[in-house]
Length: 231
Image 1: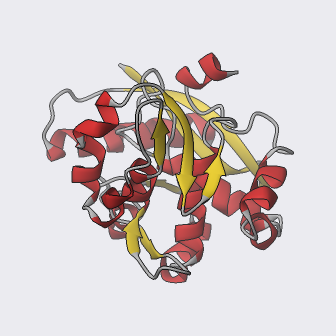
Image 2 (image 1 turned 180 degrees about the vertical axis):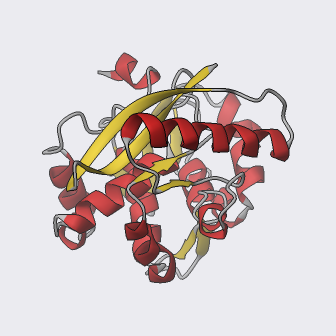
């Protein structure tokens, strides 16, 4: 058995941002087929326990094309001023500022996998901030910068973001709440929640507006056990 979170954008037929953990049968192994079996098991358990079956897996292991497209490794956007096409993952990794280096903005033009495993990310000391084209982001709230990147990318891809309203909840089988901080499934649920209550445009108007908006959400950013260490 294993435990994974399901991120709900609706609860009891109303807009909400709710995290619910679900016990399900884990299928061990690194193959895509095993991961997909685990996704199916998680969704079946969530359907029984949470009374909602409209759940989308967002990862490269998703059975749905839209779930694969919404993976941070694939979801991309063009920056307004510099006209650079960048994936969410590459933007996130390339914006990290460490004690001994960064941001390594050359990673913006790398593929997502290369950006994530770049050795400088692991050898530059403690993470101290994020900097994206001159805009400085603090480490708290824990998921704010990642969420802001992901939500902006969604806003610039309406053919994908408009389909999110078909779902009540989202999962990411690769997200381990004991090891990770940020989660693309949580970001997707946040987008649906803010869209449902009519605040998405205001939230994305500026980094300051985004931080003000999410600060009013109870429990915002606490998507993993590791996040509790930053409170």
